[in-house]
Length: 559
Image (cartoon, rainbow, N blue to C red; front, side, top):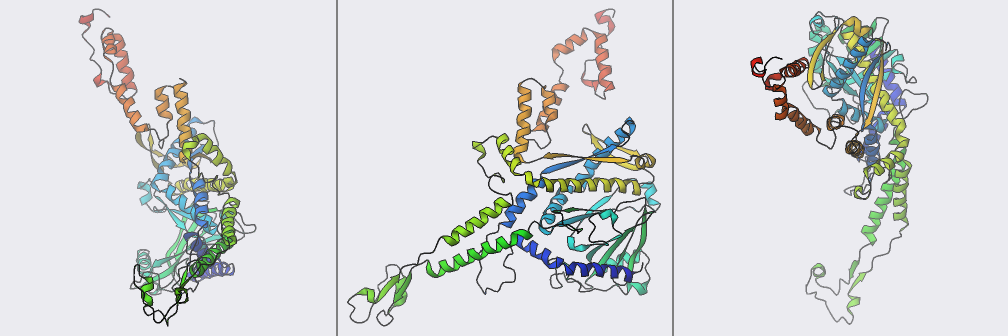
């Protein structure tokens, strides 16, 4: 395909988004979530009040989903082979390290947040290595990067099919400085006559919250870059193009049979590849709450305060009326001061507007499952962690659908990583992981990696304060009852526990390194037992240097 054909497919996607009013709607949803809810209203210098109920509801739902920490566990479908099971265990530890290295916790929060606001959000993954080049033979270490993609910047071949891997092609658009595009084109040996066609454009109508005036002005400006990818029998092929030039020629990733794109949909929309926004249905109530607050504020400004009325023919110094302790002079004979100066009492305001506003806020929060009970707005000193957790979990049952969507998102990430490891590692995969506090590096052969027939399991564990408190209390009870030893108690503590696990581990290590004197004397009295203990320590990788040296056999006589 040439650049014109790719741009035509992109333009068809833009037309589809515009018919659905996707660009303006997404911008509107972001404005309402962030608090810019009077956007476009001409109110002069008047700053109208706003009571944002959308953001607290959204923050609660986003936190309830994102607090479920996900851990990727790879399993081989051939569970009878212990070697494959051991490799899957190592891959799981490696995936955990890659999760932290890629800052996936932060990226996951952003995916969930933007999926709630606009309906769906995406991550695009790529490896900085190129499988077809000789350099990969030497470089066995994966370098997978993850980038966020807005809903409005991704275009599917079939906008009615929610299955990403069944798409004929996918296009991702982004605004890139022309200078950077030209540099990439030169590295790819693009002819000069084509490089001259790479110029800036003003096609910013597809960007959320972005316009020509808001872009950073540079000498060459920015242009729209299109990442085009499609499936073939040999793998995924991709290229990068502007409106007239393909500046990254077509490349093939052999063996990659899934798109390196994963997404999360907030709610399913029938007959659409996109999701339904969690903000959209709240906007009518939000508008009415803001309007009621504005009307109450205007009425209060006009009628809720006493007004001063004076006869300008009789009061010669009206400014003195606003000064405490001032002497006010009047002209002529004034029999009754009420005829010269008088205060108008404020008019009473109906409480119906206040009741309507409070009712709208309360009902909206409760209908969204984000009332006081659900959000945990209780006094923790008057209730146990277990009871708070139970009440909160019961109220959060309606969010299980979104938690399942997030879990599926993590599973898709795990599958994409495995597929990319296989495709980008034709000569083996070098993995680094931590085992028992030690960092281990080893190479998995490409044939073994490819033949795993991987199955993926996602372990979920809540990480909110009350869940941590509940886990710690359960371990405390087991230890107090004597069901577990102190060593087992320390090992069972989670890394983010409120109990200082690292401190307790240091205490255990110190205890183990200091052998009691009575034990040392007993060992000296039995050289055979001493030699056996030293050999056991050395077999386990320990250091026997601190143990007493084996005494001369003449000291204790024959063994």
